[in-house]
Image 1 (cartoon, rainbow, N blue to C red):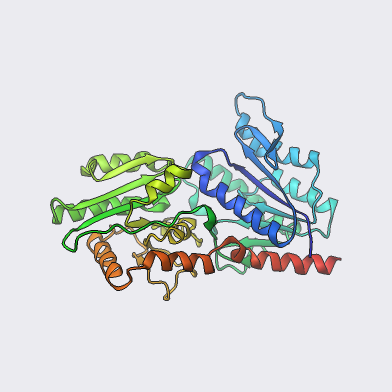
Image 2: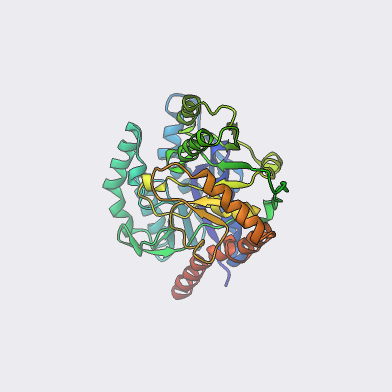
Length: 382
């Protein structure tokens, strides 16, 4: 069947910290378009609201300009331009009275039109750390129960069958493989012990990179002169704390902060690593989610460290090292042994990981449950 859709993400896709999110949005839109038909997109770029990449509204700079844009004018601009679509897909970023008003207007315009809201991480209340976050979280908890009056389905990467009284569509994060270059394993002499580790993220405390840093510190204390490095690619709220930790434990020669990389520079850099780190601190936010970076590492053919439960990487997936779901330091010796065993028993592991990603992790596969439900609802309304 053919259906026109609209994808709404109150996300600044020009923010270098959100490159992964921007790629995800682009891939989801493409998957929906290929399955159902044209998709109109709305997002932010700095202080500009964009429709299909074209400026529809520019907020005047000034005090609280960004806050006003995110809280009010983003939604107001979309309503003013109109939403001519058969279904609406919204990337969720907490609930507010303005968001409820927006949903109510969408619902009143076409009562039978499906409105889906994707919640990337659930539950998410424990992510509120700063005073500002806690205020927004309080408003969210007050308003989100009313979403059930307007939203037909919640798209979730968790195991929840119902969220805020709304039935869910359960799926997992996917990956856009076409832009990811397969990494080739380094060829090392049998007696050469060297480990290059990488973490790519909008660095936050739930990524658990401090566990890697402390693991390296313990390993070097036990094995002086060990060739172990950890590169952190990306910026984020937790980066200053990690830099201070590196200085405190004396690992300036072993841990590098490379900042945000993208495009060819990122792909070139990713060719140099033996092992990657997924989000190994998710227990700190009591969240059930599907880590996007794990899927990107898999598509690149780079084995990775995984801590939280992930249905895509079950017992039949042999290319991830499982770490405990706690704050214990990563066992670097175990990581090195894992890699050595993998190189010996499965020399083409990088190619197998790529095939695994192509078969199971594409966004077309992950959006299939969403497409199926949309087809069901749109056919019923026809």
